[in-house]
Length: 204
Image (tube, rainbow, N blue to C red; front, side, top):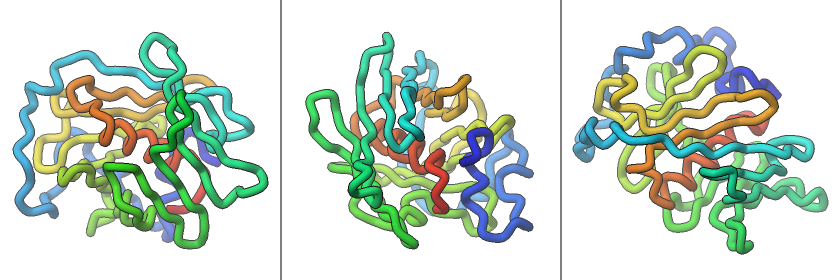
């Protein structure tokens, strides 16, 4: 597993430069058509931090600490059933599932219908970035320095003012920072599942 560049699992062809060679301050050309209107002012708020920690032995079995280092979610892969990774709330309710195979699948309760992982984090036509759709809104995932992955609503300028989430390594842990204005359950759960998918070591 590449802990410094999760995008390395996205390319079957090593000649693809993808988002790694892009200008992170300039948005890629629009490939999404009509999209819901996004207000950049919504991002001028504190980021909530979720830390993926206590890997056993990988992110496929870990604890996710929320704001205030409060245990918020658990990621569980039963050794007897390694083909399934389950996402649970502290009270034991599952909200997400990854099915591992040659064509891995993703399902997030109330947010993302069961679909291929390659569709959930689909590649743009020019292979410069990935796109995740939640609640009818497309989000671009752009790779930055040191393996950082930043999410922006599609159709707006990709800069600090429009950033809605960021995934990065911090020591032995992986950290998801998400704008509190968009941290509703569906989008938050989708970002959590996407983080595990990116750092799972599996090819998307």
